[in-house]
Image (cartoon, rainbow, N blue to C red; front, top):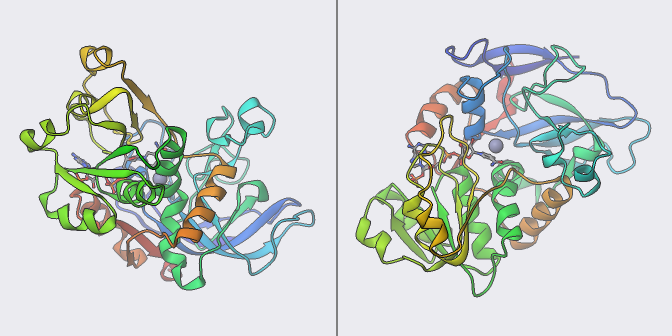
Length: 349
Ligand code: NAP
Ligand code: ZN
């Protein structure tokens, strides 16, 4: 079936309207009419070929919400009309240790929602900047939020789970002091989620202008990371830092803020490496530098349910498809408050 989409034909070309094809739903497939799709910084890294191996045409988008419009004969969990989401994963091997543990995000055979090999045309996956997608039911999530919040739920499918997973794994909660570095799409969700988990939240930003907003998002304290005195005041005080910054930067400046046995988890994925951390900022307090990638399907459902229960959604700016290129430029300047979401009804060419 031919579907309206928005994507790029080369890394140095703007995104533009295009037609793509979707497979007819197989026995275990769910066909989704996409209502909204968030714009993740990963979309920009991939479509501009900042990360290696982009296939063109490239249709990004892995923060997908919409309604089920058809189901395969063997689909048990979904019905036409259900409100659903799809995040960064549309397939995996389904039989390895990681898949068995519900951590499909760490399966070697994980198929990402865009730019991963697939039997479907054109040979790699095409993402959510499109009117429709067809996905195996295992990778489809239920959305419990009210219909009116649907657009603001979209970013939970990547920005939400990518911050929820390390916060949970490293024990954010009451009595813990948690730093969130970078207040963009991921970071603003990190603040909301860590706050809802009961942690004391310290937001680190390069933008003085985000101070008030960070407090409103749920931060207990805000530090402008260019202010060395303010940074020094937090030395050895944090249990956990989730670092979402999309560009290489000095990690030592944040590592020294951790207590003994504290951990900094990198989730930002810059195109070029960070300068290596100095070993002394690690060994002097037995600190950990770690990484985390999105989350598995069961944990993504858990996060969506947690957010529905706590009334958590993203702060979004809803845009038309023809505003995507301008939105990318504003995201690069750190101007988005805090996630652009595309109204996919505007994708008709
Ligand atoms: P974003 O909305 O652009 O936010 C990134 C934030 O980092 C900015 O708002 C800015 O916050 C801060 N920043 C500081 N210096 C920067 C610089 N020189 N360039 C860019 N940002 C800078 O991006 P996002 O969508 O949250 O994604 C953040 C990163 O996470 C990206 O690299 C993305 O690819 C990656 N990611 C990883 C995963 C994963 O599974 N690990 C999942 C999704 C995304 P302040 O203004 O507050 O300083
Ligand atoms: Zn993403």
